[in-house]
Length: 369
Ligand code: IMP
Ligand code: MG
Image (spheres, protein in one colour):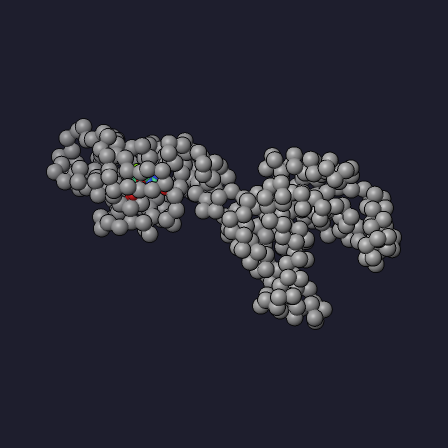
């Protein structure tokens, strides 16, 4: 992901895919024009990179020139097209191929046609690398299109957002939801996850989603998903991942404007981690980190036994049960540790010390995300 001025953009079309699209345009045009020596005209500024790559690939003699038009302000096309550099050469009887970086509303293209109205060219051919069919509202024929794209603002490969981004070799798409920081919080029983989650959500204004709480809420309120989940639990079966994901999705959507989320109790398996990635991707966002509180087994056992003295939780009273819970945690989460480590997203944090000290350690990880 990249940030230009105030906005975030995510990878959309790779350099390699662009290269393939450019080659396709070159092949089509070279085939169709035969021995004609065309004049390629790039529309500045956006098309400089395309024109350069295009003519390097073009297998036959050709001429190249540019005109400069401007229509865009920020992330919106305007109808007012300015001619900044016009035609400087007589094109009577020539085959002209316009090389556009992108055709959006078609306003610029309309201006191009106006410019060529009285030039008596042999033919005016329009070629564009990117084309947004949903935004296009003119009737001019587009003879060659490298790639059709959805009606979203893009940058890179010549295209800019207020001047920035033209230099990028890949193309990025504007993120519709702006940046969220999403954390998967992990820790063995007794690591102090709940306490730390409360601090973090205050400090970073994040929404804490504890899967256990979400389940209890949905079942208590007899939501459709809650009843569905309960039907599996009543049969003694595991709730299918999709049901849990649907519940989490509802929680995320309920808090659409949030700064981010702390996921607690989920994911537990590789499949769930993938499903969570897909969910965040769908929201134009991502999981930034798995933050795991690391506490030595003996310290955990002592803490839980101590908690058991007052909490009344039977599973906190028996040392062998405690040890088993800790062991289970490590067997289950080892897979997830690998999953997030592979993406450079695993951060272990020393969970021994005062609550404040641990919060400081967690914060130093989150501040760097
Ligand atoms: P149109 O006049 O609306 O067809 O837009 C054409 C011009 O607007 C292009 O040549 C670009 O300079 C600019 N433009 C259109 N869409 C985008 C985009 O998604 N990102 C950056 N510039 C764009
Ligand atoms: Mg342009």
